[in-house]
Image (cartoon, rainbow, N blue to C red; front, side, top):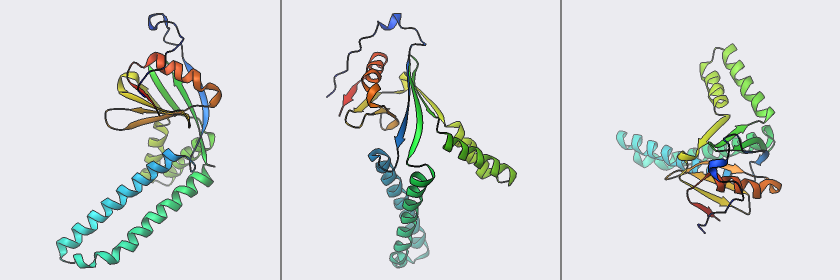
Length: 205
């Protein structure tokens, strides 16, 4: 369906910029179909890139017939990444990440407010700095800088809403730029605010 939900809110000309809806939610990880789909895409692309690299190198040196013996090793790399993902998400992050969302006249803000994750990121920065490892410190700083991400309405071309799982996908011309998760008790209000401020196509799944 491509119809928009009408919002029982005052006209945009009378809505003050600070009028917004804010909520926090624990986003599931290893039992999140969207997260698992993203993981499958990343692993698939990584495997394909490695396969292309190995094929190219072996072809250049004239040993292309040795490619089959490298395939099990590539499979082990993929298996290691899968195990690492489930260990990190399921054990270290306790299968959830606490996230805050804000919808207002400017757009949609996403902020990671999970104390455990914030502590891990700070530890990585300190460890990298004290160990004189700029790579580790830089990775930690980069992750911290991405804890809050703002998406103005003019960056969003369309929105897809998964009513069953209460997931809102913000998209540009060709891919998902952010997912917004809503609690059951705030879901209707969230959809009304988004429908009020966003004037592009909204698709319901």
